[in-house]
Image 1 (cartoon, helix red, strand yellow):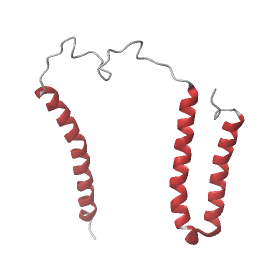
Image 2: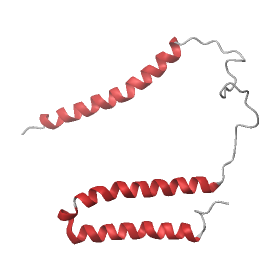
Image 3: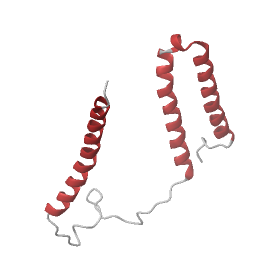
Length: 123
């Protein structure tokens, strides 16, 4: 087996990387050059369902929204890891079971900490 077999694989990877970068950059560049540019005051104003916007667009959200979103992502990722583990539990044996128990315990500690800090309670 020669080295040429491996270089063929790298050529395909390099080709896809080049296309993956060149196509979006080219489309954005040519799109910017070809589109009509005629900004005027009414065209660049904010539009909200036919109603003129009122107030400031910069609104500060309470940190609890972000924490709940992060916890949702954490437990969503947990379910993504649980499904393949459950399918392959026969092959994993006790080592796989112990690893998942530790994984769930760590996530449970995080949930208990959030619960203790009253992050999950809305005011």
